[in-house]
Image 1 (spheres, rainbow, N blue to C red):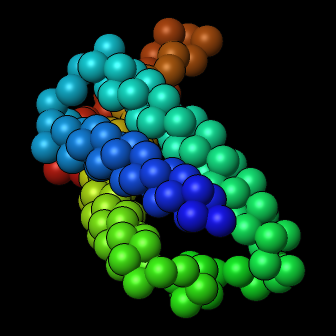
Image 2: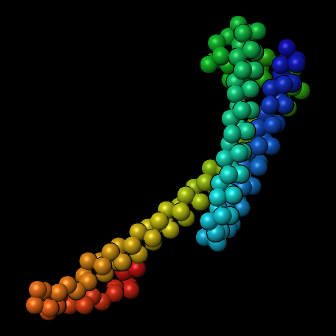
Image 3: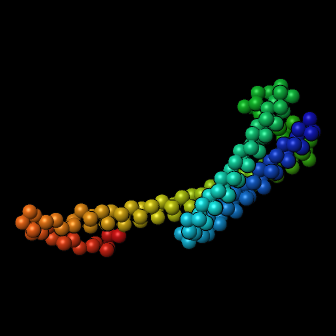
Length: 164
């Protein structure tokens, strides 16, 4: 049983390490927001994707371990929370599990904050691009056309710079 609890702590510590790496990539992306060229942005996206894949693999290991604990203790896996695990283990093991879990939750909170910032900035850039495209499309639609007699059908358009 102690081995399972030690493995759980180690898995949670692995998750902390991977989430810290993900937070670092998100912070880099947020700091350089709007300054990254397409190649750098793709590299950051790939690093984030690799972090997420590793987190998913570790999370699968954690779920399997919690399932093994639930079988050993005769409880349903869905009902076995960290609080219940901590309540059934030695105080020092419980304290270590709570500490690692607290560190992980702090990282997750910061990751969510950084993701919201990055998403809001990306949304603002998309709105600016859409507005610019709208101005260009308006200018194209207003392009003068000629009648069969060779006369202009409408006036030459003026660019609305303020709308861009």
